[in-house]
Image (tube, rainbow, N blue to C red; front, top):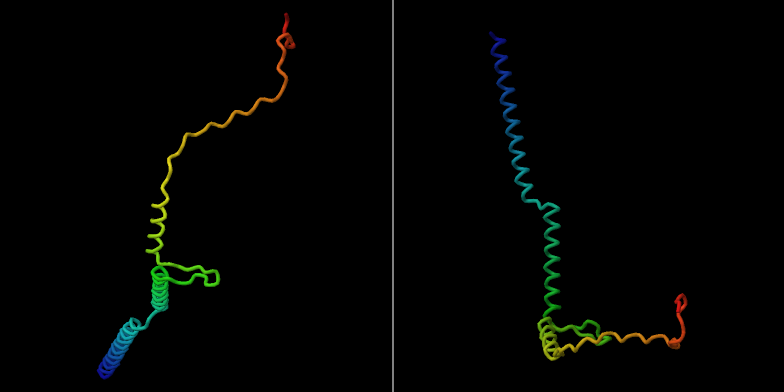
Length: 129
C-alpha cells in the first residue's frame, strides 16, 4: 500500500505541474496577443506615410489651383486660379461669334488637254465609209 500512495503523489505532482505550465503558456500567449495589437505593423506605417504624402500633395495642388503663381519667371509665364481661367475662356468664347457657313463649292473641272480638234472629214481608224 505504500507504493500505491507514493504513486498517487507522483501523479498528483505531475498533474499540478502540467496545469501550471499550461496556465503559464496561455497567459504568455494572451500577453503576446495583447502586445501585438499595440505594435504598429509595416503595412500600417506604410499606409500612414502614404496618407501623409497624399494630404501634402492635395494641399499643394489646391494651392496651385486657387492662387496666382509664377510658372516660369524668366519667360514671364504666370499661373492663374482655375476659376479666373474658366471665366476668361468663357468670355473669349462668347466674344467669338460663329459665322454662318456658306455654300460648298464643288471643285472646278480640270481643263481638257490642249489637243487639236479632229476635223469632221477625218475618219477614225477602223471605221468604214
